[in-house]
Length: 280
Image (cartoon, rainbow, N blue to C red; front, side):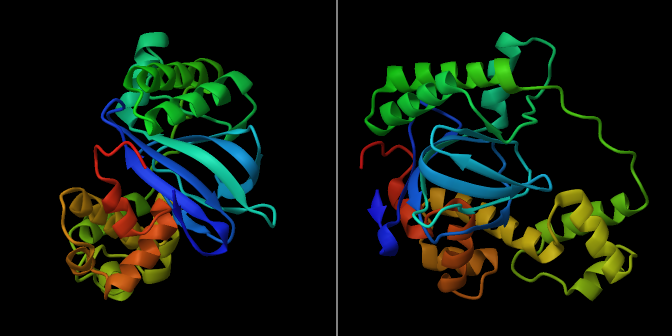
């Protein structure tokens, strides 16, 4: 892992034996993840210390041995729950990966939903640690087998049917249009007032409806989109200095700050990992 000031270290990578799964091994002390979402599930095991995170309106604490389960597109944070921080191994499997496991094990249940954010499951925790370590050392058969077993154990014991969505209200149309505008204007976004006028809503009403629908205010949602696009450009080999301008950040320092608050490592470290690099 790349060492950072304060004893922190983090490594992000992918392994071709685990298609559709991102991996993060890290120890954080002062680092704080801002409110953000992932396209994938966030599934991992705490190795030491305590992580605290806000999720679904509650603050959760995950200590050594606990398994963390965060559903896709769900707003959450992350920070140390004790002075010495926390260390963990995280896997970020795509919806397709976890849904495929569920379809094989639980036919007819649909996309898995994990109602509990922190669970005690020594068997799954052991499988997650072993799968992650095998992926780190390039043991393709072991990593793919153990990861599938871990996801299967969690789906069997901890997944549930997704709760019904509340009835739509008049703000849904405004939020949908506002999201479409933000997706198309990363580099030159409108002001809040212009955005509200474009979707025929009042600014404060739009903020309330937008946050109710996405968990984030429009400006934070925009930065999440920018980081998501930045990852795609970095994966394609675009230099970080160019990426900042192409996704709408004023300079590379702004990209670095927002990227690390969401992904856990700076853009350059993310890109150095490479899509198929499996060894430190």
